[in-house]
Amino acid sequence: MKTNLLSFLVFTVFSFQSAYAVKYFVTPDGSEDSDGLSWETSTSLNAILTSTNLSEGDEIFVKKGTYVAPEGASFTCNRADVKVYGNCEGTESEKPVSYQLDNIETFLKGSGRRVLYFKTASYFVGFDISGGDAYNSTAGAAGRAGGVYIDHPDGMIEYCIVHDNYGSKTDGSIKGVGGGVYARGIVKNCIVENNIAIAADGKKPGVGGGVCLDGGYLLNSIIRNNHCVADESNNTSTGGNNGGGVSIKTGYVVNCLVEGNKIGGTANNANYGGGIDCSMVTEPAGEEIVAHVINCTVVGNDATSGRGGGIGFGNKGSSEVVNCIVVDNVARSESTPAGSNVFLGPESTAEVTYTIWPESEGGVGNLNAEPQFVDGTYMLQSSSLAINAGNNEAIGDYDKDLTGKERVVNGTVDMGAYEYDGLPSSVESSFIESDEPVIEIQYFTLSGLRLEKPQSTGIYLIKKIYASRRYEVSKMVFVYK
Image (cartoon, rainbow, N blue to C red; front, side, top):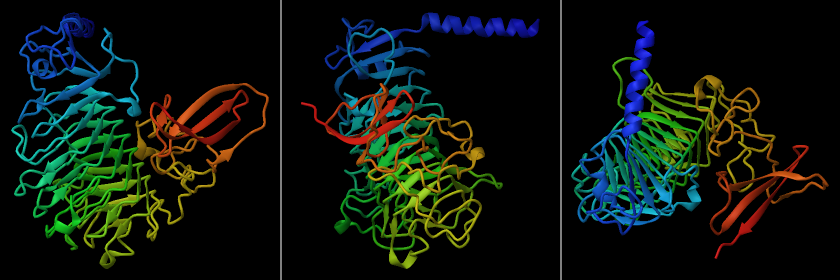
């Protein structure tokens, strides 16, 4: 009887909250004086995010267009746990059913401070976030997160593009941390690119050019071309440039591509992790592992000013790398060849298992083989030794790879961010002569991101699947005017 009564009370409370959740509507020209209860009476984004009328569970629909943060301030969402849906057409009464990262047209722009800050369990989806500078932001610590600061463990951004933000561009005395994102919450299905975490004059180091995780989760995302230095010729920071792409204090990086990031700075042994840095891990009191890098592809990152071109650990432990591919990264000559891809300090107890990295000299499940990527992508050829070579226990309940495919196809998880599903080894052309009908067409970017359909000019992989499940794959150029 007590159980039934409790279930009834929970259902009643949930129904009460759902019944009284309010929908608000935002447009670029919405009035701060409007109630925002319909598209016809739309309000401004800043007005609704700061409104005292917001309650837990409310939904905010944001029409496509450009939204500039208030002068000298950020978009701030601290009133209640709400859901904020970007990329709306301006006619919706229910949340959009899907988002495509190549078709995000709701732009949040910085105005002298970081772009977005929230200390609630709110959910933002479908935004392009750029132009932020966290040097003197009033919420959270200065210098953290030029783009987005998620200051709640259940806060989340999804299907967002966070780019061209600065940890500390205007004030050279403040250290930049998390040029794109500083996360105590969740970053999922996002692209974080071309962000910088360093002081303007290069005298202070940068940490996490793209993302800094402080207890957060970075899931199924692409982290590319981020830096811990803006201008190599003027950089005089003497050490502590950590994580060109990602720096982990504590947290999880899962099913991510970390590509083309750089730490920079004056060459020395205190700079770590062109792609991912675990040298600043918050050490627990016991033997708990608090920094996790799982099923990631870490490639083409640069630590020529330090150690660990792909991943750097320093002497700290309490970290793990598992089911990853870490190749084609570079580090300074004093730390190579051992530190070209993964650098473990002599006192580090970090664990690297079930991972491809060329300098590997053993360890559980590790390989020093070539990963055999499909030409032009980071997906796996059918002959790759990374297929079915991972540890299922490590991937756990993360059931989708970076393209949205099933994470475990043939009983055992693959290494890297992309699960092998039968794509042929050549993408230039792989044609099948067949009179069978085509039952499905799939689209991929060259980095392996699965799309519903291309929406912008570029080169894509086109996979045609026939009734017998045979297929052909080719490169095609889509041009949109």
